[in-house]
Length: 537
Ligand code: 3UK
Image 1: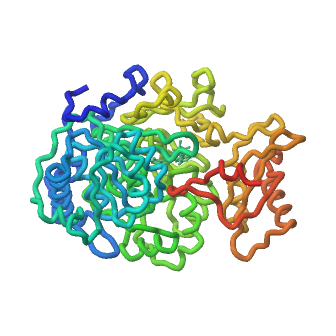
Image 2: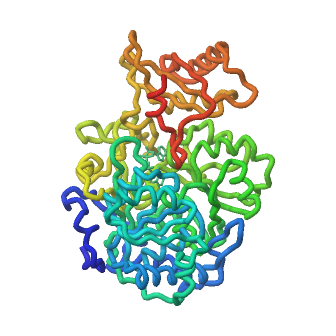
Image 3: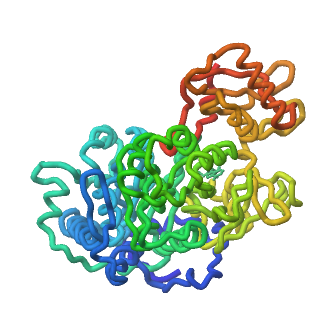
């Protein structure tokens, strides 16, 4: 490793032992980075050096800000961190806010100052914040005033967290006021390319949250992979979408990717299907990042908006059912780009260009990454055989002081916890999370396949399929379904849906039990919470 710029050595000291790291690949010429690199400087100061200073970096419903203005504000905030808040390189800084310009500027400020950004989902509660603050020994926090209450509630449980400032706040000591008094220039800390820049906590459903550590070079590598090879982003693109900056899907899609290309990003704090379509219409957006359920909801109402500007759509977070892909294409003529990524891998590693889409597949390993499907003994599976997805590339899993490192990384491969098959052409097909495969009467059934079949019925808005304990059969397939308006939750509807599944896929996979709900439990990132369905009665 290169000599570190961190004076606080916590992050390096808590990286997993070297023999537990995944193998890293830097085969592409664009991934050969210098030994010293600060990713915030590369993205922001670099944008000015590339002549983008006068271009618009961020747009919001309230205004816009140029690259030069964003750089100046990030520099002022970095000065506040160092001069007024005593930040030392290597300190961890909690960031809390919805997607807005201050959240973006603070993220850059922390990293320019050699700090480690720990951005958290806006909806996290005090207990979850306490776990994160203690795990990452967070010393500083920058927080949107509107999210102050939960942080204040957490504070008694956070002994290391001593310095907090709030933004979008009129108080004299607020972050906004402190920043206004600082100069707009800042000398970036000369970090090593392999110094830790951020710790992203997984939106895990069970157990304590895991902190994934990412180096400065990892952030830039994510910008130089998916957006170049699959999205083909350019400086004329206007990005919009829903994933929070606190989720690495959103950090890339809503902030780092657009800036890497001199493009602009539209930051909106809360988006529903209607408001996302309005945003595309009003800002003439060309690129949209969101989750499959949002694409499905937008498909139904897209005709009410002028979204002619929209060219490229990226779906991630969970599997994109083919029924949703087709509905969205019928409504907009756009072929969605599906991509699987993970917090551990920082961003997308299997995806495709719109031209190279293959129905039912997530795609192929994007340039820079390799992937394979392994059996339980770690040997490659034959094409068509279900096994564990394994990937490697320029990014990879390094958990912060966590024994679960040995589960995610084996033999240099990152094991994402997903069951996949590969075909003879190297396309990868998602089956289920490994622990979500349903075994019923001796058959292996992938819940998402049954969901995909149900979504092909015109009455189904959303659905989730899980294994359900059953006296006679051990486990049965049970579907939780949200009907579209105008359809009745009747016994005959149950029979009709069961018949529909039997006619779409192998009949033994049909849901023997069907329950109608008004909404499905989902995370802030749009993921279906199957464990909550399993807990229902
Ligand atoms: C699942 C998918 C099928 C899969 C993420 C893009 O979702 C992200 O990170 P998380 O850590 O979850 C990772 C897990 O989510 N998944 C994600 N995308 C897909 N399954 N098809 C997909 N297209 O189980 C994966 O292991 O929350 C996604 C970029 C950055 C991310 N952090």
